[in-house]
Image (cartoon, rainbow, N blue to C red; front, side, top):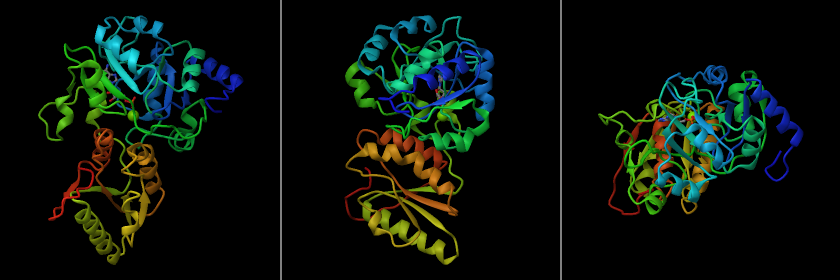
Length: 352
Ligand code: AMP
Ligand code: MG
């Protein structure tokens, strides 16, 4: 079904499944979610089991109207209301102290709850049909790239889910920005489509979780999920960083050397560079001029490589102006932070 043409009968059935404690995968504007009734501890536990997700990694509770927020969030600061006015419904998750109706199974034992009011109409219709509070992590097996199509969900979860609502390919392609409002100054726990710059314009003061800034940071990320190696493709992925010419030359050299040894190599390039590679399996992730296209294709490209025979993948870096932080956060995790830095005299840096 599409957002414009909902299948009312299917949505009603999905709502019944959720109310009975079952699981429904559904499209949102960010990635596909694996939904269960957020107020039912058994349903939350089913979600963890289906994904193979560590039980200390809390779930995001999805709502379909602002009136639902105070039912699950105990303190809602003025700043959060302002942000909700500007960015909800949309790809933003906010964290608040939780009320007693939210079971600890849903929040990984924490006293706080993550809440999102999605912009996708099918998602909102499902949330309403299911009783108003749907816990939904990304609908992938834990550790795999997040799903951006219903086929990805089927690939990963198949029988573990009672129903998959196919709404076609999602729009954004990377997960929501998470902002923590349980601290005196709001903190970004996960970068996403809503950028630091946009948040700064709305909120004034905002911080980045220090645990996210460096891989070897002595501080652990506050969002438990950010400490795991996520989004990993099966092949060894390395990111090559530096000026454009040097990056292209380095990837070409490495791909050729690997092919001479009989290995199959994957290359992640852009509109601007993909014609420059003459060996390996080259995937065009999008255009640096339209950075949303890179976010949109990121997980799909990583999954496509999983279906091929490649044993190593080299990706250019994508430090684009707005979404670069969110894209590189995912790509660096997928690569287990393996970065190859190259330099040359020229100044046209890739992604910098
Ligand atoms: P996913 O559901 O796969 O998009 O991941 C949700 C992310 O939100 C994970 O990184 C969680 O650790 C994080 N999260 C959810 N609830 C909380 C919370 N109450 N406090 C901090 N992080 C949270
Ligand atoms: Mg996830």
